Length: 64
Image: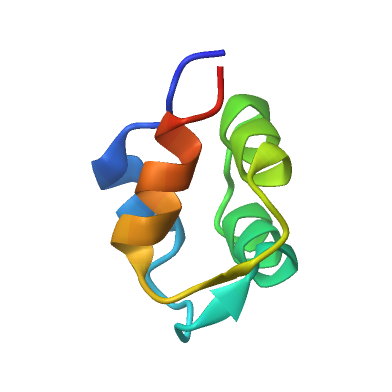
């Protein structure tokens, strides 16, 4: 699985009110037209609360 582009993640998650959980990240990404690969990455990150976009990007980068 290819890691989502950080700029694309930023665009997809620009309206997220951090901190937030995985479900909200997926909801926002879906609402902004995320592709299946990006949604797969977001679905595979730990079900946790993320303080900011950098934490989300880092979590996605750890998914193989």
